Image 1: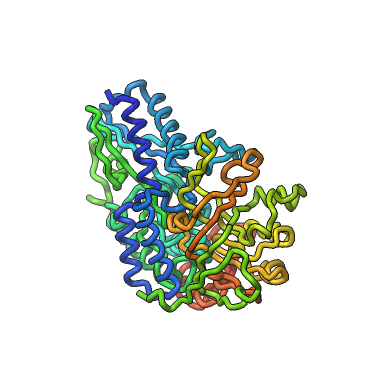
Image 2: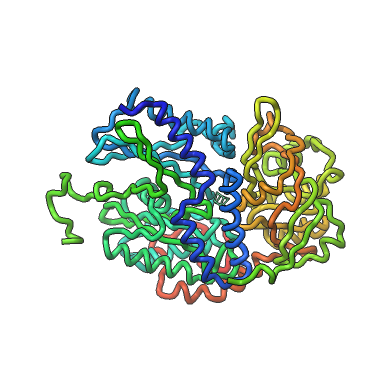
Length: 320
Length: 225
Ligand code: SF4
C-alpha cells in the first residue's frame, strides 16, 4: 500500500526539481547546439542560457520566471495499491502543486479563462491536469511533472492523406518559422509532433512526444525514426537560431508519436518544449521507497500497442 | 562558437538620459542599475482604459517598465520571496503602449520579443523610448540574481500576484539586448529580413495544405504578431 503522504512529499520534491534543474539530456543537447552555432547573437543567447541553468541550480531558484503550467502524468502499474485510492492520489498532487507554488516559489500562472480569477497557487478548474495511464507489471506508481511553458510554438491542423509527407513537412516548417521569429517559442526546443488519432488525441500525443521523451530517443518504427532525424535536420537548416536571430539552432530534437485515425484524415499537431524543458519523475515502489530520474519512460511498448490483446497476439505488420 | 566580446556591453541607469540612449546600437548588451517596475495588461487596462491614477510617482521613481510577472510569493509576515523573473511577450500590449508611455514617462520597455517597428515609430520615437529584450528568453535565474530588493507591490488585491505592479531595485540586472533604437529600428526585423532570403529553399518541394484556412498567408516574410 503506497501511503498518501509519501505521494505528496515526492510530488513536492518533483515540483522543486522540475522548476530548478534542467534535465541532463536537454542540457547536453543544448551544449551540442552551442558548440556548432556560428550566429553571433544566437551564440550569445545560448551561452546566457547555459549560465542561467547554472545560476538556477546554485541559487535553488526557478530557471525561468515564467514557471509554466505545472501538470502531472501518472503511471499506475497493474498491482499498485494507493492508500485512499485514486481520489486521494489526485488530492495529494493538487496539494503538492499549491504548496510548491508558494514554496519554490513558482509563478501563480493559472487563472479562470474568463474572469481571470487567480487562486495564487496554480490550482483551479481542471488545473493542474492529471493524466493517468497503466502498465501491465509491477506494484509501483510513476509520478511525472511537466512545467510546460510557452503560449506559442504549438499548432494543430487537419491534413489529409493527399497532403502526404510534403504537407506534413510544410506545416512543421510553418510552425517553426511563424513562432520562431523573435524567439516566441523560446527555441531551441524539443519539438513534438502528433500524427493521427482524433483532434484531441493528436494534441495529446504531440505534447507527450515533446515533453515525455528524452533528447536522442527514437521512435521504434524505423520509418518514423527516420522522419524524426530528417525533421531535426530540416528545422536546423532554416537559418534561424535562438530568439529568431540568424543561426542554426532551432531544434534540439524532434519526436513523433502516432495514433490510428479516420481513414480520410491525417491530423497533425506540433508542440515546442522550450528552453526551459522542465520535467521531473519519480517511481514510488509498493514498499514506499522512492527513486528519482529525469527520463519519464512513458512510451513503453504497452503504451504504443496496436493489438487487441496484451501481450501482443499478432505481429505488427510494420516490424514483421 | 562566437565570443561574447563582439558585443558592446553597457551599464545603464533605469532613468537614462537621451544621450545615454542615443549611444546604444541594435544588438548591444545592456545591464541595468536602479529601479524597475512590472506593468502589463492588468496595469495598462486600469490606467489607460479605466483612468485610475498611477499608484506611484512614475517616472520620478523609475523609467523602466518590465513586461513581466515574477515567480514570487508574499510571506505571511509581509516580506517578499522573489525567485526568478522572466519577461512576457510584449506585442500583445501594443494597443496600450502609446498612452502608457505618455502617462508613465517610461524610457525603457523591457520584455520578450519586442514590438513592431511601426509601434516603435508611432509610439516609442515620439517619447524618446527604446525597447530592450530579455535574452533566451528563459534567463529568469540570471535576472533574479540582479534583483536586490522588492520595494513595494501595488494593486495586489485588484490584479492578483501575477498582474500586480512589482517595484524592484536592481543592480547589474541583465542581460538585455537592444532591440530598438531612438530612430525606431528593430533588431528582430533586421534578422527576419536576413532569414527570409533563404526560406524558399527550405520550403522547396512542400506544398500548401489541401484544406485552407481563412486569413492564411503563404508569404513567409510575414510575421504572426
Ligand atoms: S516558453 Fe519556456 S523559456 Fe520561454 S518564457 Fe515560457 S517557460 Fe520560459
